[in-house]
Length: 358
Image 1 (cartoon, one colour):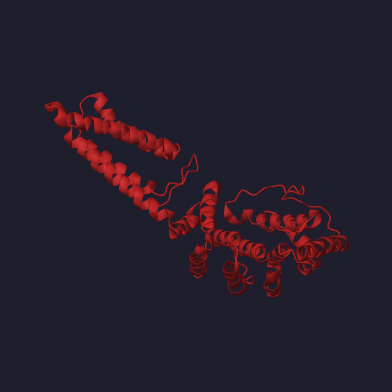
Image 2 (cartoon, rainbow, N blue to C red):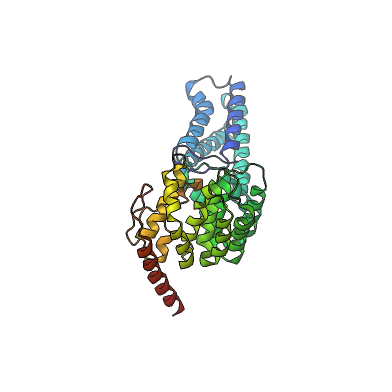
């Protein structure tokens, strides 16, 4: 149902089915190959299908369809010649013309049906989990289309997230991407769905791979803001020492001063974890970007601007510089002055609260 063009990053949900039709078409054409004795006819009835198929695979879909349209016009012209002229040589081509006409009809039916299914909300959710992060443009396009549909897609997203996390083996792709969509849509229903996952389904004591957990915690913090602090604090208290960096990084993104104080109290632990030889490179980048946000941030938005879940297989293309001039560096190793940062963020966040109240 889903295929991504390897050159142009074009998402063509019907291409897998269409390829099967084309190969069947070529096989039948070869069987009825006797009327195609000249090179020109062989090109029109056998070479053109291969040509069109190649177009659909390696160039933008619109160009391939333009070539296909021209070919259809040629076929219609030839069929009219057969119907109008009483020429036996033309009538010998009725079989290949019939094969072409039937195959084109089946192809367009497949295009319509599979595209309609893929553009439905369940189809987009299914596509979102199957597209590789090596196609970030396609991933972001599918997520954007779901986000644009607004609150109406929150229930199916939440249900799919629940079903996905109920499996024995959970792929990190789909949960992280669903969480991103819920965060971007926002609202009480989306926030409640993320809160339930963080509070009830994330276990940071099992030493398992935690790629989707790290992304979901951070995205929940982005969505709920200070309201996420109690849930993340509870998660921090019951987390294994080696995995405490996940709720700590998420707490920073809430923009709550109490949460930031908690994180600053654990800075030594985070820096020690960076020095461990077996620390995952993606998680090390997550810690460094969080510390950079604390050290160089100038407003509350800087706290959640760092692309810490970019490496969590979302397939996003984040901005590497904020409006206040921070250039994100996954190898950041600057100094962290805890008392100075406590005073710095106390002033910024208190001023922000006063402005919000006004």
